[in-house]
Length: 178
Image (cartoon, rainbow, N blue to C red; front, side, top):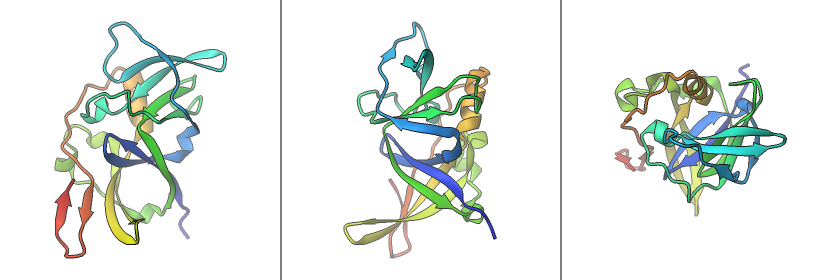
């Protein structure tokens, strides 16, 4: 019997992604940040967390999206020791669901769809969603947030320009990109 993975469905821009839930300690409201002079797009700033100042990372620019601070609804606090010796904060537009997924449900990602981000995509996961009595299938990218943050701290990340989207299937069997 396979054990389930606990994944967190997040919103960045208008797209949903999945990340590992076991590296996240808390979901909190956006933290008030202090700007860091001449920082890259993915650094929102430093924020007070307990007695420490921790970096607040915006992963949207790392995924080739524009940096927006106005829409941020949640900050994810990454466990101390997971990526660095201190906690870190990751700012996202919203957190939608905590999902239990079987490892067998993870499909390999087509490399051409993840250009520039291949090493940060663990795979694709097809999920069913229900809105107003309409069932819809979504294919979401399962991101390796831990590796992304680790490489960012080691200075190994350059801003990629991936070309991927959330795909939705209509009942007719055609595929639409959104």
